[in-house]
Length: 180
Image 1 (cartoon, rainbow, N blue to C red):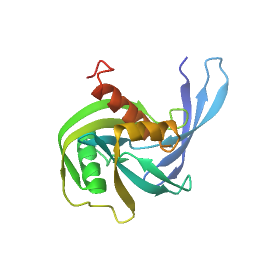
Image 2 (cartoon, one colour):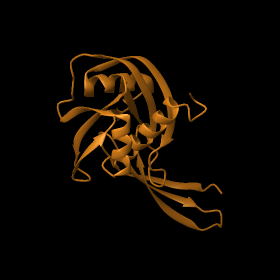
Image 3 (cartoon, rainbow, N blue to C red):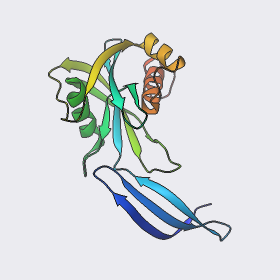
Image 4 (tube, rainbow, N blue to C red):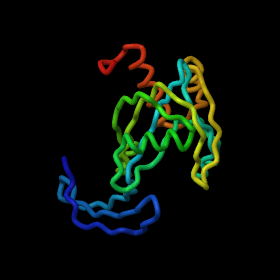
């Protein structure tokens, strides 16, 4: 079922992403072109302050909306995912966490991108000063578990990593998964 890579052509290489066209041989012997977005990987964090989830609201230009999200960010070259998660939580929220638990690693959009997301649960929060990047504008909000789940059900949280993160963290927290 695997496709054989015949040729790869980088069409664009930016600061964050690379766009590539791959020519592949299919299992039936025919060829096809695959459009790929190459991404360095990212982290997302379900940060709990007691029984509340720390969330951020920020404008996302590609969708033209202000979205509710859990803190997240891209990996720097050679950076370990846990270190990135710790850095991003601090930068976006001003929080440091005493306890970290890796919840899952998953592909965000495997149909066209290799972006891999490392999901963490952060607890034992200590509030310090927010340290946003100069091009980052967001607000930090605390949301109860019940409200977060209701917001997901009502379609108010539209960001996939946040939906996955909140639901998985809730399952772990309530003992509804083998990870607890």
